[in-house]
Image (cartoon, rainbow, N blue to C red):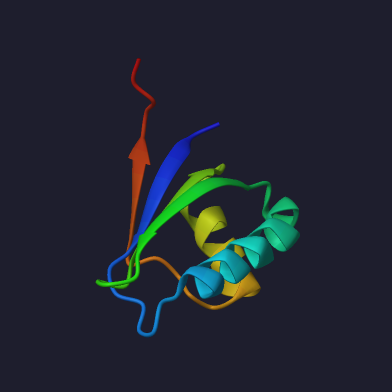
Length: 83
């Protein structure tokens, strides 16, 4: 299955508990879209968030965020894991 990195460039008021809660919401609905959110990274200072996701398509990954909490990514890039 394709692997994507989704990027949120600026989430206003981003906090560690807030991003953890949003990730949990993703996990609760991801099965509906055939998606698996794997990890996330964030920077409270800039409001940037990065999510690593296995998904059949970019649209499926976006659908999870939209349904779970409405914070859709600004950019989604297909990636491959290096050695």
